[in-house]
Length: 117
Image (cartoon, rainbow, N blue to C red; front, side, top):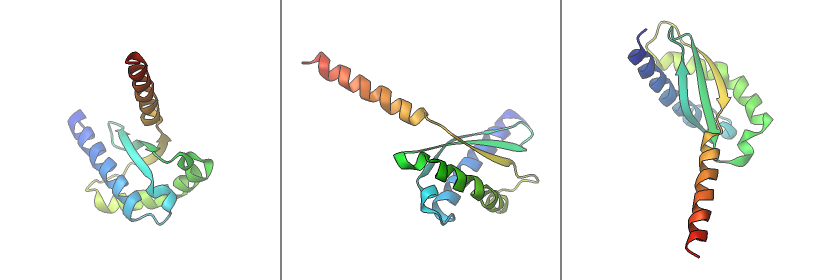
């Protein structure tokens, strides 16, 4: 599969998994998750899905366990929505880049305020 096609499929997976988490998963802890990006292997057989949440308590081990259990359900729903011969195996990974970015912005705001005082 060429790079452009892989990227298109990864973007489609990101959109669909986000939709599945918001609308089809019954556990409200998973509704608060945000899909940051999807890395798909060149052959399309494996997808790493990077997630985060704006809610602090969502990063608990309990939510990770529930998400791991829901992976099969999510993959099955994804199979019905993707027009692919092989649906990739999904692996969810926590992505702290959003929190790190917020921390950097907060520090910059403090510096800016201190500069004008």
